[in-house]
Image (tube, rainbow, N blue to C red; front, side, top):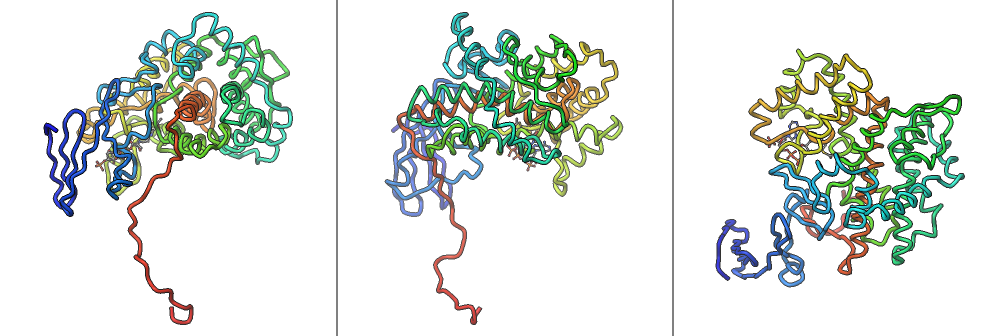
Length: 447
Ligand code: ACO
């Protein structure tokens, strides 16, 4: 092995690496282990440590997985330093401006952009799976009207496996595909029903003559008493928001879906697990938190006060919609959304745009601040999405639901890819045990 790097970690192992292998020298035992380095088609190389434990009884330690590639994937590529996001090789900017959500969904699932015939067949399939079992509506009645719609989503999506038994055998490719189509098709219906339930309006059934985004808007905002007029700018913006949230490689919720699926759990249960993870404010829940934060700031004059709080290590406050584990540059999705924000607000005739103006000023000030510059903290996808969603008429509690709706296609594509990988084994991380060593049991009278 020709050594390029030699990393001495004191009492920890020394690591030497070249292009296709690394040698670890355990300074404690002086043992040497050669490990191969795997190359991707694009991006960072990874050290293959799969046999490190069985052959050398050494574990690696990476609690939040910052340096861990957990799988092989062909779906999405992110270059966080340059702010690049590719789905199956296509840039997110191209997809957001030239494709529809269902084209992107097909791309994520099948690996190539559909031709006209393939797209028509796929659209037809999704459209004809949008209705949910009539019995499912009774689930909603069991929830309090003021329940957070994400809690309803977790329950109802998890319950799908109780309704669609004929697509839960994950060893059957046909059933895997049907379950994938069902999830993508039914998620807008389930999300719209969660909203309707919360405001006490009747559920609106899907309409097969409408596009995916238009159908969702109709199920959300139409009422039986009068005609609902769809605004094409809003439909386009909704579709674009879905595209921008469709997939993002091995983020927390996708990894949750994969881990749940690695045990052989059915896809409906796995996606319910993904929704639960997405809900957290450090992940998908941030879009709701951004709008709440902007409302709390209220006035441009108060921005410095909030910036100061975000930088204060004694405060748990963070600038919501800022920062990302992988992007150390402007999140390309945030750039597209910022543009869409102006388009939608103008098309809706909203002249007074205090939240957008506040957000842009907050961004301007943060991006000039040494703290944010040093740490490479830029706006992420959640920073501008909430402003558009609010302008369209969604309450903040629905923002993360829309994220879940769109991300379902990514979860499903990643789940399918994993299940179809012949090297699949159950995911089972290890730990660094920091508790008591074995000790004698103390009878209660002596404690
Ligand atoms: N405001 C203030 N400081 C921040 C922020 C923020 N939004 N984000 C990160 N930092 C600081 C951290 O305090 C840390 O500072 P230190 O080095 O002085 O300790 C440094 O930047 C690195 O941050 P980490 O927390 O180590 O980064 P991590 O990768 O673990 O977290 C995360 C990423 C969770 C997205 C974080 O940036 C955050 O909490 N952002 C706000 C919530 C948010 O917008 N989430 C949406 C993410 S995108 C998505 O899921 C769709």
